[in-house]
Length: 147
Image (cartoon, rainbow, N blue to C red; front, side, top):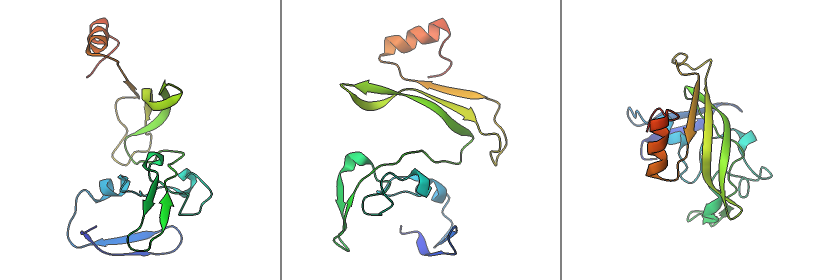
């Protein structure tokens, strides 16, 4: 936050942030988890109390503020957010021993109103492969286009 000169809320739906200088990765920085992120209130897990309804990763457990002494119980999120050229369509979780450890498949559809124009690719599918041999086989049989 060294780049932030000041910030203010201008009504219920507007946040104004002034930076000290030009800072090209600012929008990207707002999307990172450190430990909190910019997110629609509808995507927060929990009961809307900021100490237990927040966007820090649920696996992080508790985070104690050095400044206030408050403890935040990381609740995670219920939805993803973004402004890119593709929108999340579906995901197939990878489950090991009854626990989700990642995704086996994620499908994105092109964003029809993306600010920089509609993309040529209609559907983007990201598959997880267990081994390099599986990747090689998919490339050779034509079911994988790009590594």
